[in-house]
Length: 204
Length: 243
Length: 185
Image (tube, rainbow over all chains, first blue to last red; front, side, top):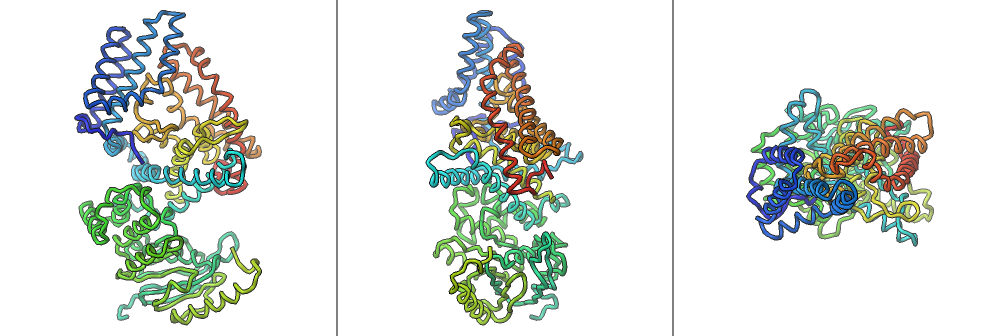
């Protein structure tokens, strides 16, 4: 499965993931705490300069990721045109775009493994409370492994439907789809047990 | 064989599921390197494969492989028996080849460095060093079946159970995997409905309706099985074909 | 129930939610093409029950946050979880929604499967989810709760259809695989 990490290597790829996440939290709080138009414009410029530094490819990728927000930006501006004034609307819209873009920046420059490692460290104290870290790791790996498998099977089911129907596959196709997923779950559980299962590992 | 512990010992195995007898009184002791289990669809042969691998708890009897009770001692079973399923997608748990190969070794309790070394060594043995970080879903069915096989061989079990792993593979791929298997030191138990694929096997077991119909030298059992199947197939009545 | 089967079912349902967003859009009732992903969240609860269903939805949301493009349209990443993201409430609400849906399905055991799962999907999958979604939107857009609620009303009819489907699908699955529907076990 393709992750959302940018293939364009940036200097930020090398920074520790924990630090990046902490920085993101602080930045988000600051953006909320400072509802001044000048500050929000400056922050927005700073973020987009950061996007432009690694090159245009990276920049456009970032723009594409933020694009789904446009209806909200338009909505805010129109709303405020009739009520409190465009200035206030612009502050909220800018803050929204900046904060989301900044968070996307962390995702784009941090590998999935690095993120998982942070989660693993944060969860470790809870292991004693019965949180099974090994099971979480395994489940995450299985999701990555089986999402494309299931998507392929779902597409095949839709095709099988359409081969015998003039209409597009409807919701009824979801039932056999779920049966397939449940069958896969049983098979994987068996494959897991064939190689020692989950319980065994706790003793190591 | 000189060793006191036999390689494969199936002792009076009974299995009832939902009040239905799936396996009845299956006993089989063998020290040979190539065993075939023949049977039709629904004969119970796949269930027997799962029982032999210790995955399916039985109602009566026991299976020991190299002296390990595979249902009870799951850690011991890891080094004793591996199973190759028919569909590689039912077996591969991880998104990349390297992770998949490491998993079983980690489960055996090997230290990290040795796990990594064995993975590299196994991949090199098959000339697939480049596959280490390859995504499973980009591989073909045959390639995925090879990944399953490598994952098992890396764990070096004494016995490998093959549950019709070549059904659905094209002829060159099936031939390649057969060669790989022939070269392994592990003993093989090959579950199949096709008497042709077990040419060169030492011993065979024919399962019918959850019981042993016949056991003996592979060539004899295969010939009898083939004759019986051809007789059945000559009738044009599907009611004789069980699901 | 072995731990392995438990973990595998949770993982496969998480993959199922993701796959429902990846496969070409299904035409649901009345020829309206809608992504089936929020239907997947409802089904987590109605099929797997409160605990397993909630965990599957939690795993889904966590993996999206870590940067897997599992949301329909290949979306994902931390940007969606910024307090400024208007839809953050819905994502955070997914696990709670699946949990509540499962809990209600389990409690309504006396009803036949379809109405039990349908009612649970309306309460857990719509009421609970929208409560989270509306709060999130009100924070991100600095609107009052009422105004935020007004913004999401357009999506309620589609989700009502999905709740009905969740009931029908769960009932059909229960007929096909009674052992697999844990909310009824």
